[in-house]
Image (tube, rainbow, N blue to C red; front, side, top):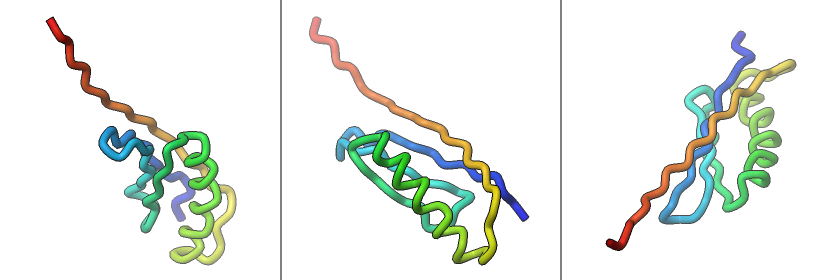
Amino acid sequence: MKNEYNVMFTWDNEADVWIATSEDIHGLILEHESLDVLFNRVRCAVPELLAYEKPIVTDISIDYSVFRKESLTLNG
């Protein structure tokens, strides 16, 4: 049974929100303008989402990756 999961946090510049997704955790798609709030939401959602697939989940490890890409326009 897998007990390590990866969650990716990406900044959406157009919507001004962070988005949390995971290829390992089916159904995890959350967003919020605050990264700290989103981390907390993910911590609450992950055990619930995993319970749908594996009724008894204990001792899980989650690796977080944070990405932010911005464009800069210089006026010369």
